[in-house]
Length: 311
Image 1 (cartoon, helix red, strand yellow):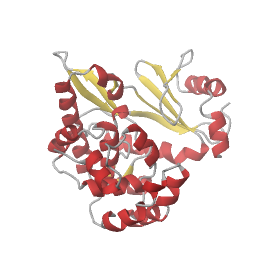
Image 2 (cartoon, rainbow, N blue to C red; image 1 turned 90 degrees about the vertical axis):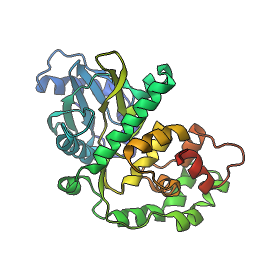
Image 3 (cartoon, helix red, strand yellow; image 1 turned 180 degrees about the vertical axis):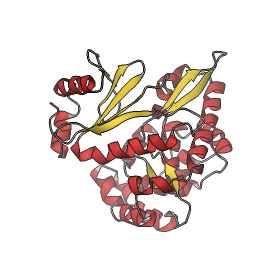
Image 4 (cartoon, one colour; image 1 turned 180 degrees about the horizontal axis):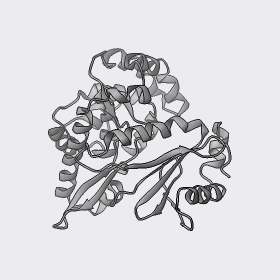
């Protein structure tokens, strides 16, 4: 009942079309014991994700993303009860039809931090960002050895080298202005991350949209959950600071100081900028639109300080 998706064209045609997916979603819900449910699709996210009821979420992965489903399941199993905030608990997973796989997981309460942010007073924002720093530190402190085969990459330094090879091309394809793309090779020559032994479990998209806000017994806002581990990897912890600077602290030095205070370490902004260019989902033109640099900032080293600096 779910159309097969194993090409980019099929993805663009099928995955956003809820009417096309709904018969299969209803059938799968029935098979999982939720006959008569009226699943509601979440509007955000690259994969189809449905709230079945107040306590359950169903996430679907088409054939070309089947590995993402395995990665999410294994990571959630590994993380259950091990972080200062909740993560969804995987309840069932498996294959459906035409290459689709699924993960049925518990639904966490709260709303995402990006939605809650405008209504939060500055003191609450800083406190929540501090908690986020603690959460990421705890994530990075875990030994990911048992996940290495499921998550990858098997060789971090080889992954970085491969990303480096295509760095300029990727940004050119996304429409990056020449004044920026012409700097990439020289910047990476000077600031590319050095090979090292430290390997951590990486979320890779640690952003406000994946952090949930609820309230404590006194009615005070708190971070209550962390979502979306389908792109998880094992590698250099500094890689996760790309999303932190762009989507949690958003170039606010004071907030980055709050974050790094509880994280326990302040990465070199140039290293994080290098990983911004090397990231699997890197899109520098979009970032420049989201966080326009101040007048006079026209080089990557200065931009690194703007987006990832503290103070």
